[in-house]
Image (cartoon, rainbow, N blue to C red):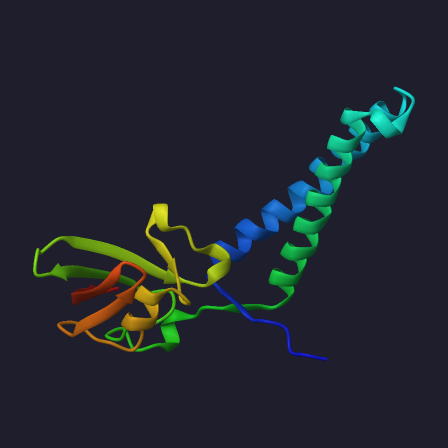
Length: 158
């Protein structure tokens, strides 16, 4: 049997996943079951779009529950207090400057389970994070992105 993928996450990220799992199990699952019951009462299931839709929702909810349970079971907590504060690592926030234009950006490097680029949280598997991991303040780093290479300078790590 192959080893299951580890999911790196912060305590906050794990809590969010646990809350979503609780909601799906206690609320959403019951709502979908009720929709299926109501749709069955309409009679012939072969041409019953409400029934088909409810069954699709049920498959999605059950799939998401299984996915969340697996992610939580295989969670590896990010513990920053054990890591050198001057080195880019999982859970750290990095302020950097794009070269040569000088545009500043800030990213927090998290596990893929809690990445959200719109909130500045990037996955440790992303090209940006892979290029930054292990680097220190004032290092210049070339990042291979899908749009081509870009150079950045690390200004701050916290």
